[in-house]
Amino acid sequence: MDMKTAQLLRDQIEVERKRNAPPEGFPDLPPIPAGRYTDPAFHALEKREIFDKAWLYAGSGWEIPNAGDYKSFDNFNRGPVLIIRGKDMKIRAFYNTCQHRGATITREPCGHAGSRLKCQFHSWTYDLEGKLVGIPGPWDFSPDMDKSKHNLKPVRCEMWGEHIFINLSPDGPDLETYLGPVWSDFEWASRLRPSNRRSRVMACNWRVAIEAFIEVYHITTIHPTTVSSTIDYRGTVSTFFPHGHSRMIVPNTPSNYKAPPDEMPGDWDGGRALRGESNVSYHVFPNLLTPAGPSGYILMEFWPHDHNHTEIVTWIVEPDWGEGEPPADYFTRAEYFDVVLDEDTWNMEHIQHSLLSPSFAGPKCSYHEKRIYYLEQHVDHLLGDLVPEHLRVAPLLADRIVNTACAV
Image (tube, rainbow, N blue to C red; front, side, top):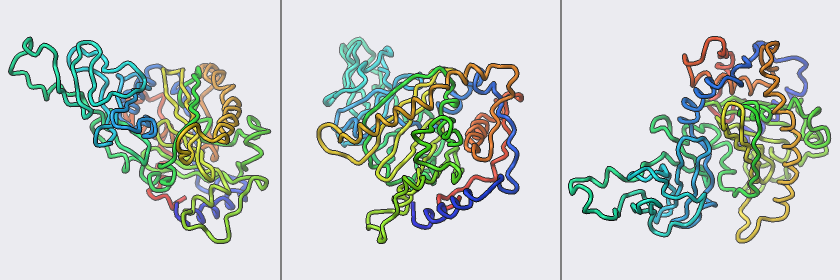
């Protein structure tokens, strides 16, 4: 983030703090149809048209540092994916499916393959770039068989700094284009190292879960002794980016304010100072959240298991600590966020059940909660005419999307 953007956001925070009504011309957002959160058929559309075609976070290079190191990935039940670092140190992804009889190449969640990948069924062997290099009993196969047609099937895989993203679809933009302004605005965080992984499964829709974290209207009631004492939701500034992404800046309370130095250190960008004055959070569509502080951020993943079960995975992401265990304060930060997450999730399952009530038209979003409506609007943008009439969301925020990080 550059200095100009940081100052624009500071100015907008003061505008938000002083307003006593939504800005002139902001639309009265209609209720979001409740069936979008409870209908299995709608969820199936999302899986096929969104998760099967979006760039999805799949881990970090820190997890597979050496040539031959690998990890498996199957967070959305669309066939296991094998992510591996090649001899050239490049990270690639393949479907974890042998092209002989369909067995998985490896069943372990992570490990070291050496210089070859060998199927655990009939020992068909592949190099680290997915090329078929060995078949036991070759005399039983036609001499005309073209082995190149039986290489491991690649999955699009690109890096944002040390972070790995995959995309099951061969179509669509590259990762940098997809992330748009987030790529440069949040660039400082791409080199940081995740630790302290936590996971929990909630009996709720993935958007019930994620939407609790893209507004802070609830902090005085849900977090009265934790988050509410550190940030002031009245000054929140939200920005919509292309491809469904958004940014939220929430100023710190006076007791949590860290003034920028009189002279900015040479390695600081404008965002470093702003992160001492406020919480800076990005929603990377569809299922990634990154609330950030001065030195690092919380990485939050939201993985739908079905229409009413979601796995929430969290990481503490901070500067690399080198060998051994992470610093003690990284664990302290993780434990504190566990407390906050407990406060956020205690009523999610109750909300999911309550959404079935025939008396409820659906969530009614305020101006402050507009990121929720924008998420839903972008879901419809991707699903198009596949959305049943009674579940559609009007594109009322389409003219408020900005293509540059320095716009608010």
